[in-house]
Image 1 (cartoon, rainbow, N blue to C red):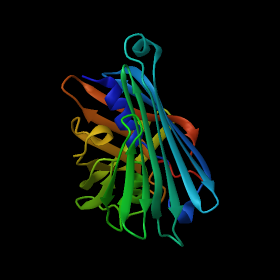
Image 2 (tube, one colour):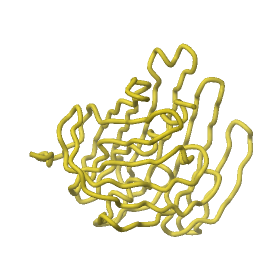
Image 3 (cartoon, rainbow, N blue to C red):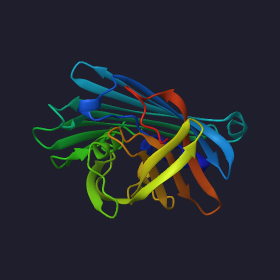
Image 4 (tube, one colour):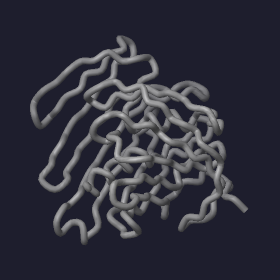
Length: 251
């Protein structure tokens, strides 16, 4: 089992975007990632607003015990052009840098919303391609931002288009239930969603994935878990700055 791949997977799911009407221009989320109860890494997600653009950067670092035989140092970033009013907007640029043991990957994608095209490059293998996209296509980081602006109703599913530098995927996200959970930073009322992952790399299917989002306008991801062949991988919010106003944590 590749703990490193799962750490990278969490780096995609654990995102810190807010709807335009409740924007916190500088937000940071920090998560501890554990495997069968043992801490394996830390994921940090930061959001900043620069003019008409949102810049999202996520990093994943392995802990010292994992570094001794498989060091993980991944970074992904997304630039999103903000929409007007409560409209989400659209992706402009996505870059994915992977360093896991001896494995390296460096890819980027530039989106043309007018032509509905995306040009992606594999910067290590010196290859590039141009693919068609839909008007509602997002990269692996900005897609969760978009989902968090939607009305999530337990028992219903929604479908989203994701471009991962290789292929355009139409992915189902199931909205499962409401649940109250305890975390190191407090107790939260949440909505549990389950992305039905199909794509390679970041969105590889590693098991049953569930994400707990705060049951409020912000929909902050406070926990992610996935079952694997041996045990379970879990990422839990442990710190950062994420409440732009009075908290909405459970009483």
